[in-house]
Length: 108
Image (cartoon, rainbow, N blue to C red; front, side, top):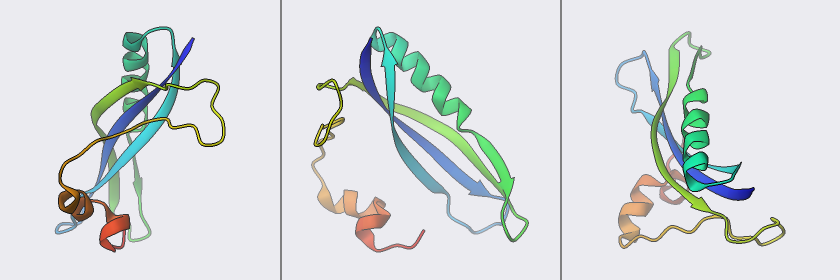
């Protein structure tokens, strides 16, 4: 068995109008024999994340699986302190900062 990491995107929407959707990006570790098996497991995991509940205001919050972004083999096994599990490259740091609430200072 090999270890893979899957990048999943989900979105939360509320029945209350005017509220912007909240997106969640998850990095999930999977054990699989092949990348195809890991993709299948990742897809199933993403679909299992779908749920709905009522918040403290009584509004229905719905989490929906949007996209399986990537599946990659974890280069080091076994996992340990300092193990890099996923690397992403991008060219526009301003765009990254704009969508990442932890960098933009936006409250969730």
